[in-house]
Amino acid sequence: MNIVTKVYKPEFEKCPVCGSKLAYRYTVSNKVIQFSSGHKSRIKNLGYSCTNQDCKASDVIFTSQTASKFCIKGYTYSAKVISLITILKMEGYSREKICAELALLGVEISDRNIDNIFEREKSLLNADYKKNIETEYDFMYSHYGQIRISIDSLTIKGKRFVSIRDSFHNHQLGLHIFDENDTENLKKLLHEYVDDPRVKSITTVRKFTDFFKILEEVVARDMEYIYFIKY
Image (cartoon, rainbow, N blue to C red):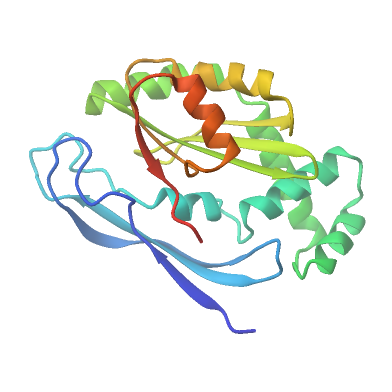
């Protein structure tokens, strides 16, 4: 199979703190990812930093939020594959049956990886996201004078997975699952992340998507939106 290489760098060219030009430093990750379509792609996530040594963010390595959403740290499977595994495990599928389901999609995986992925996702779903919001938001604001987050939404088998990360250091703040049409509870959850007036920027899906329309309605104020790059 011919493996296509996709190279990603930060979705902005200037430092979000001081406005200086960003410069390439090193490749943060470079690995082959299996997608739910059965295709494999090499995803290279390039790290950049501010060229102004006096900037508060001069030690931050900025990466592509797009690549980060494709590549879950520690795994070689796309977020959609990982979400599918999580749903099937929650529905009571055995490891062997999940492996068989994924094989039909062209995805190769061991039964041990099934368990490892599910345990990791379960821990994220059960994490104290409200404490993460408080801790990470205060840290970002005290260090950089602003809060920047990344919000991704994907739907699979009637469920919506919503992942929120800190855009400075790519820390996972929360992972949530809703029924696909449960807009009311989705909005309540989003308010917990975006109502803080210190939030300056959100990296997310593009304007024409239904999720963006929901997010924009919840935010209801001027906001800098940065969009994931289309694969």
